[in-house]
Length: 386
Image (tube, rainbow, N blue to C red; front, side, top):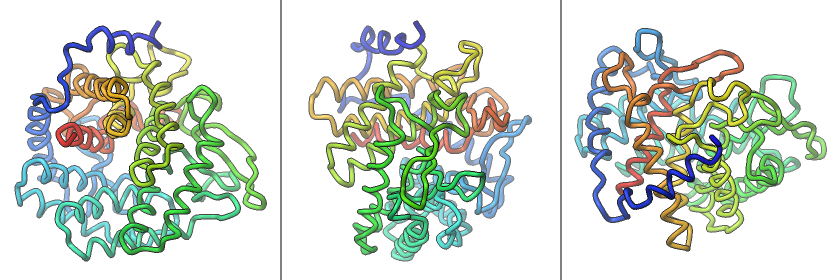
């Protein structure tokens, strides 16, 4: 029953969701609160400290620039600048972004895309500063060093016993390639992104539209050695945030390439995600976690999926299908901005409660996650712009 409740509620309540072109009021409330929370957070975080997740007292645990999630704190500041137009937020975002510039040379992880696009990517988009463009191009070159033409993918991790691990999250970092190729970088970057995304469709996406988290390849011949998970409940389960990364990642690939293959993939993953959501639109951390309904929810997965669904809705040709994805995203965002998920009145210095970082390792469970907050704000801005 849980697996079909969200679709049923969505269809039954279709008349209550505003159509494109009409004003939604809840994003205004959300951004007002985001300004309050961020204004408080920067009183105790220095520009070389980047929020990642909340501690037991509700304050942010800070990480340095090398952490995979380091770009999202200043990314939130850039999005606040985009919403408000206030130069104070621009100046703060520039200050925190500056500490991340050295990550453009990091060849040890695929996460350079997350780090640089959320910071310098937003910065260039909103200011046009040519020095930001150069940082992005340098970062794309670093990411390209991890591409293996035999496998046809970018290597995700350098730890563990895998031979050549590729995770579903890595789709998001392909935007670094596509943006760079379109803005003066090596044209081959585009082909690398397309190759990686197509292999992801072939090996990560199951026939029912669900996904594996990790696929390990043999670098000698590109064959598959193993498929499973690192952060999900089981090798055959569907980790909710991984599924959300896939929706957003394939929608992004279609934005840059207009290749129908990526649109179809995004829709397959979106349909699987939505049909298995609980009635309030916020998934359990893994759709197949054994203790449902007593398992933790993951608001970060919901926020990422909502951002991807809004983008996807703009690419679907049939008006009814487009509205369905848009309405699904709005319902998710409204749920996230309400009790029990919204942080207003709680001790959290962030926006979204009940995020799950890594449940199998019992790390960052039932906390606010900065990337959940970032994609929540991004989704709200996408609503305003479509």
